[in-house]
Image 1 (cartoon, rainbow, N blue to C red):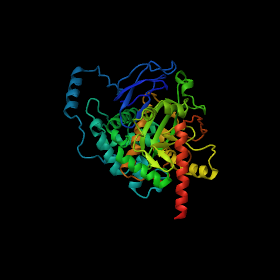
Image 2: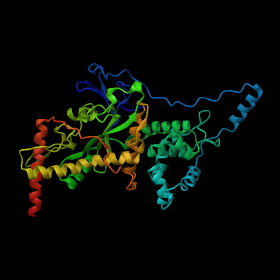
Image 3: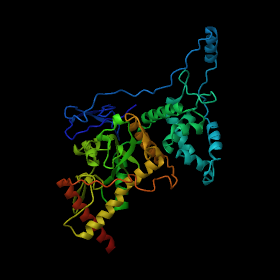
Image 4: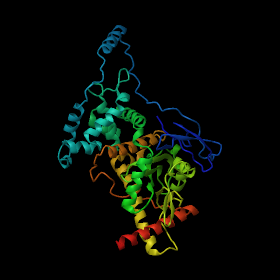
Length: 463
């Protein structure tokens, strides 16, 4: 099912929040935003004609394979076969299935490069990005939704019903590797259509069942985040870092409009994320065309609306000798300077040494968001490879589930292999955008932070 909606113009009128709105801007895609799983209702009266929602959709249905055609040879034989099949219908085993792993490992460990894994546990994390314990936890989340029963049960080549464990493994391998459905299917002994069905069923289930792994922090949790940012970077009352990235894809000619063509001439979908000190996503927005700037994406997001209306980043104000410091996040020069979004200095009348030192601290904090996206797209390679003609209405759900899995890894304390994250920038090849918008209250906030930083350094030097 699809979560969230998007509003696409700065003049959109918002009404009291409701849950699970499905509004589609042209071309057919569903922008998704996620943090607290409550989404403001959006008025359609002020949408620009090029992107006005075309209507509302319900939950997307899984397209299962059509049942095999009945034999015309003998009706009696058909009836006998039908009775026989119903009497021995396979059922989901109660005990966790491990046979799939034995078969998969035997096949995979014989491939070139398998010597890089010192044992099966390391090999398991290589293929599925999580430990066995976390894998079992994910299975427990989606088990109820993935239990298959005839006549719609998913069957492998040997004619056996796919266990929940094997379904989760197939889906996670597809997301982790970004390999084709044919390649993933061959590794598990299933067909391409089965990989497609299993993956989408897993995405729908996790999207619904793992909501609690991506939410805006409560006041106690936010106090911990602010404490970590101040201890690490000297930035008081900082609540996170924000950034955006492009998910590149190819599109059929009939869908390849300028809206989806980004500045680097790729067709792409945008993803905006706000992260904490542990690289955990606190808020995401996706589904918008890559032709938008990151500053416009921000203004189309629920985060922007909530912060501007005083309903987010509205915790305790720090009163310092330099002035008041409200809650805020840090972002790059692609974003406007606002009272709740602090960007680095490009020029200033303040002492150059103070500005330079502040920019260094700011960049160190902002780089957490950069690292989070590099880890996200490196772990779930389906996001870093060029997607071949994806369904733009389903792609936001795929992105969202990868973000949920990213957070689950952090929440469960799993340690990723160092070479999993992308070696370069998560948006390699894209030039940095620059937004010149400056809010006076944001300028005052930033000046207070610089003065505080300067005073803190002098105090530390004298101790």
